[in-house]
Length: 105
Ligand code: FES
Image (cartoon, rainbow, N blue to C red; front, side):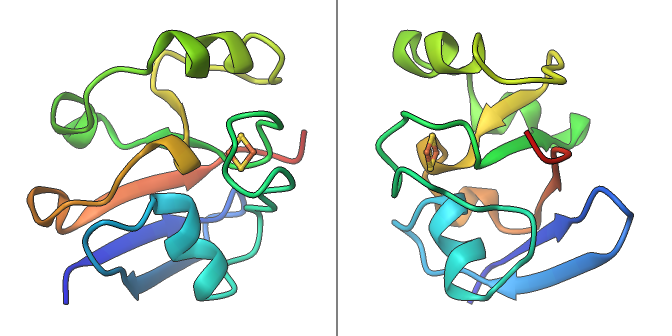
């Protein structure tokens, strides 16, 4: 099964298998990756699933929707590669994806 590497803000890496079709957020929650809280359950309404997409993966992950951009406006420490991981659907093309978890909001 394809894997995603989640990197805690401290640098600790977690490599987990994520089934295609799940969000990158759900892959973290299902595998108890610390740092992604997902308080709103994936409704794009909390920004506690904020991650930074590794530069090498930015093109493949595409751009944030208008709704996601609006929510990111309320997040802290936003960078050009910021995404809400609940809005990132994991597909086979994203096998090997690396995301760094944003510091606590
Ligand atoms: S889980 Fe709330 S915005 Fe992603």
